[in-house]
Image (cartoon, rainbow over all chains, first blue to last red):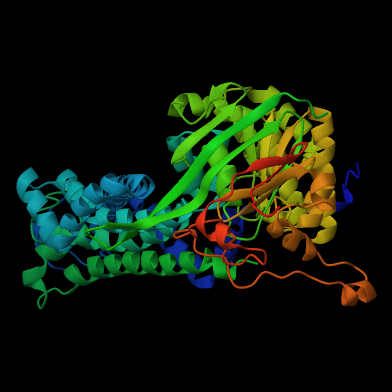
Length: 294
Length: 326
């Protein structure tokens, strides 16, 4: 037999997985890099908040009420004299955590439902997708309000409410990809080898359906984060004295003309995180676009 | 290596696909008769070539034999076990004895798995081996199909078409099967690579005593590899004979026309040669003709052909055909 090693002599330095190719392309993108930079910065500020600021975010000193930004208080102080800078840093913890956890809830439930609906089809699909349609019929924030009304206010319930509100987009996205992927020949091949349904879903469909999910995670992080902030703004989320950016905005609503710094800085922080995750999502989508694949 | 022992036995196999219409209130609008009453035996160690034009149901037959589609009617026996009535789980375990190689090596490998993982999957699924033993087995398989084992951590898109098809062959061989359906296994490859893969398949057959159902539309390829050849038209087998017999002495008009369409690599001869041609397109498998399937296009058709369906009968030793005029 002509053992055609010649046929296989082209050598590449490292195995080029599609993930690796996408990652390299992402890291060549300046916008993506700056977004990652901003998010990392906020992450480290949140983690190191206690070391980066000399003030206790909960400590009220009425004699220092509503001081404008200065060298001793970088972002000024609020109505009861708490340092806004330290509150923004500590607020990053809860605000970003809420975003992460609610996106995590949406993605886990949504991807699972979408995968099952798309793979099994027929009445399983009909039942799941009609349920999803019902969820989608409610405007996001109204749905979250309803769930909060059922569960009661609180940070954990905000995460659950926002998480459930995000489920439909994941389910629909993954169902769509699953429908097209399950017609691929390699799915037939796996079946002909004798693989069980769950293995086909886990090893063959999920990895191929996942890249667009990654984009959606990044895109919907901003939405989840904003929704959580909105709920806090409405007074249904983080309860004082917990520090959360949306709640800070709510607290400074009445002071907008007297002491704008109490609202502007948490607002800027929200904007930075949302903008970064959205732009990162755009770059991710470009990086994994199969049309650009060499 | 061909013996008389029958490995696969197909009895009156039918694979019909219903055609639906309407989005909410689905009504059945007849059925596509992709495979319509086929009986044949595949002997242990032989290669049965299966030829026919596109859409005649070759691939469907291959898949129905492996129960990738559950047939509408009829039986398939593997040795003496009836696959058609077998429960899902038992059938899943039976899959280690029968494997499939697909047409398009670009589509039949998961782009997000390394080729090593792809070849190892059958071993994992059937709990054959684990850890180091499995890695060694994968390496042996790579060597068996002429791939360098250092490439186990590579991804499919880093390979050429021929190499990918070798990966597919390695995956099919992983479970040490008796029977392999090669569904147009070389059709997507360059001619020079086709030869390599075909030689590989033939070598492996001799080495491992494999039985092939070799589905193709390329008659010269089938002639090269097959022991016996079956010709399919519109969901039915019209002729089945040993390779020599079929190519030298075709009985069925469809086979004759098919064979005359093979180009001869000699321009002078090709110019003089009289070629038989088939008029028109094949009828829709949703509404096949009343009599013989070929009657609408057959140059020899008589009144009888339009009324009755010819029986698939033995015309010479092991030479079967379904035609009144053969």
